[in-house]
Amino acid sequence: MKKLIIFAVIILLTASIAYAKEFEVKEKAGVYQVEFKIDNLRVGANNVTIAVKDKSDKYVTDAKVEVQYSMPEGIDLPPMHFRMDMKLDGNEYKGKIKIPMQGTWATVVDIIRDGKSSSMKFYLDAYRR
Image (cartoon, rainbow, N blue to C red; front, top):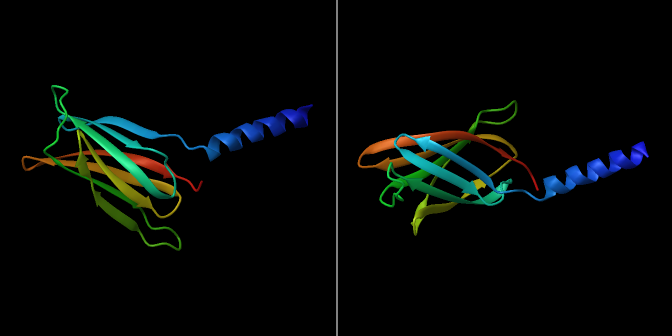
């Protein structure tokens, strides 16, 4: 009976890993409220959607938005740094980032508007799926 329960738990954990969930971060970046989403966080190509709102909760559609993601050097790996400009699509900024390997990626969303830059920083944990 104990082996059956352990087997069931392993199956459930494996199933939850196989079906990646949407990754979402909502934070302030200077005077802006930023919502960053990835549809299915994994190694490889990832669709990114970023919504930027001002103090009055209105979408900001006249900014330059870019995503930078990096991983420090490892024992046998050089440091990796990538940057992607997001394109405005309606009220949101969209693009595709390509994560080359699994691990933790330091990520920065930069919003440049009226000559001023605001940033939001967080970490992505990408896995092979």
